[in-house]
Length: 158
Image (tube, rainbow, N blue to C red; front, top):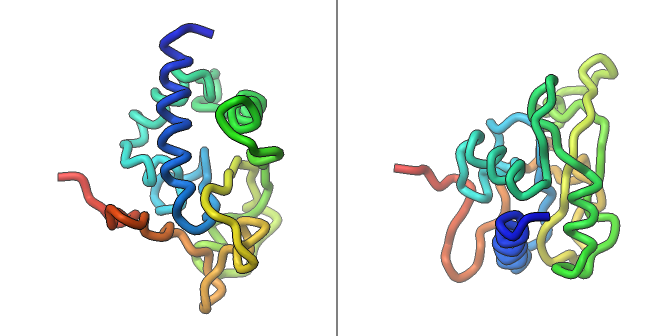
């Protein structure tokens, strides 16, 4: 791996460690960018910037099918010398749009994607992304505020 990739991984690791001070929250790595639980939103990056960052860092690639997460690279990154985490990069296969919209999940709309949990885990922390729901049984897509700097997912770039 090149020095630039290692430096990028170090910066990504530092930022993930910073994010881990907030309560536990599930972030998607490769679903629709339109909702707040996409990691690109928490990184405050446009979709093309996010994809470029992950590709250069070796955590994703571009194939003839488009942008692809490299789950093995994520597992090695999160389980390597930067973190003490095991089994953090998780592939799920659900109808995420149904959970976001509060409708009944459909077998026809199921798709695979990758999620990671970042933050302080407590007894109230959901064990699966499908359990990250509010009182209305919809998926919570707005991550908790980061203490100290008062940044939340509704920040808009100007």
